[in-house]
Image 1 (tube, rainbow, N blue to C red):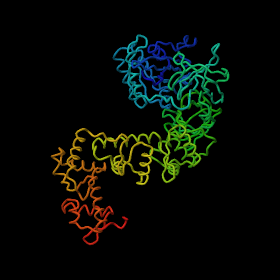
Image 2 (image 1 turned 90 degrees about the horizontal axis):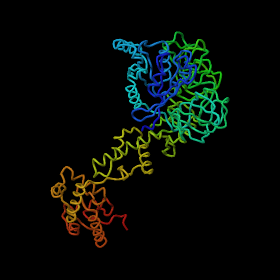
Image 3 (image 1 turned 30 degrees about the vertical axis):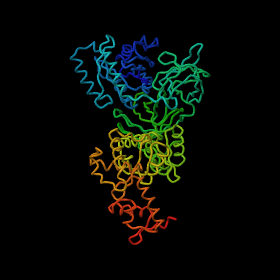
Image 4 (image 1 turned 90 degrees about the vertical axis):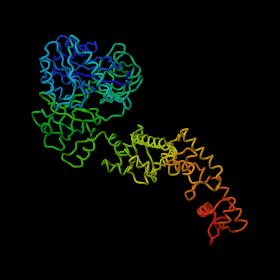
Length: 635
């Protein structure tokens, strides 16, 4: 069963069958108020849940379609992972459908399904025409490529296909993160006799557990979790994406306002001034003007405020810009939150966008330094933005320059990333290098994959050279930084380094055929002493292809078993014995010539000359005329 959690919601014009559709999908009646049942329309948010064919259990939210209840629709839409845009087959796209579409676009809900409901009321020809009309009207919206499902919530036609379509779409949706701080916008508050205060909402992030202390913002109230319910069942823990009912101890119903947020204490900012990226709807009839009074919707919150435009005299329809909202009451907000603006009166949707930050003061208009900061904030959450810049090891000076932030801000961000285990610190010449943990781990995985692949392809080479590895990884760092990071990675035991070669910690397991050939080469060399043959002449005897035998010899040299002398290969033990006999002769006679060396080693001039030159290089001997004497460094 899929352990991720999702919320599926509805949107659409009043009386197009959203509530009936959820009942058909889940078997649950979401109209719970007497007035709703009498009037046949949803006034408050309704909640249900259903089991999909894959085994996923998903929450469902039914939002009101009537224009008078768009506030409730906004409260529900903010937590949706996908939305079912319900359009009655006998009516088509209606005015409230369009406003819901605008809201969904402004809230950044990326995926949805067009549900053509009430197909039992029309014939096939009408359905074909209706689909064409819907496609045409939704062509420039987030639903331009959405699948259309024909259903009848009354007869059940198409419901199973819709259920499977929802399941398929959720396979491509990233679930909310259950790690990090708790954040749950509260959409209902009530009291149960014998239990006390209960709040409900969609858990946007984090995990709630029994006994946990949480804050209710913006009131700064602290309460303890007494019990939890998910989909009407008691649980000990609830994860992000689930619809949750939380029974809170130490708090009264009257103290909790609808629109409040249940959060981990001291993890989110609360304020009355927010930095915004605002988009005026293309369908808006008028520009958004400076100091305009608006209704600000964020999550389940609605607060009155005034728009403070920072880079435009006014925002014309379809235009976007930076602004602040000067609110009449405090609100909890975080960078990246989506919001909607509606006219103060009459109330209809005019604009929206995303929160960039909670500001400490009202900013000056048209000031370049302010706008520069807005641009930085617009590119993402400051922590996420910083983490993206740390896609490779960078100094604090480099990061400050790239992000246009000061030392105090950077230190605060780095501290937060470090505490949340999203950062690695490396050292280059006593200077800290900051590297995003995900980027560093990805680099390590890629490095080890390249090294392992090289070992498997060339098992006799003893690893991959540092420079070849740098090229294969596409590294553009300075040579010094590359070598520094590579050495530190070895010290941290991510891999091994042997001289100029990088190896996996496991090392190479030689295939049996290669091991057999190596042993054959070793055996052949046991009797050649100081007169080794040319490699090409023994390849057939050792069953080694001529094109590969050089690599076998190189491998034995890497292991220290052989020594290469002027293109010839000697066993190390034979070289050591030759050195011993040479030293003994020199100490006895004082000097030695080529002929004497040839007799001493029982070899020919062909081998004696390169061996003497080898020992010259090793500073065992030094040439004096046509003789060799002990090197001056040897006592």
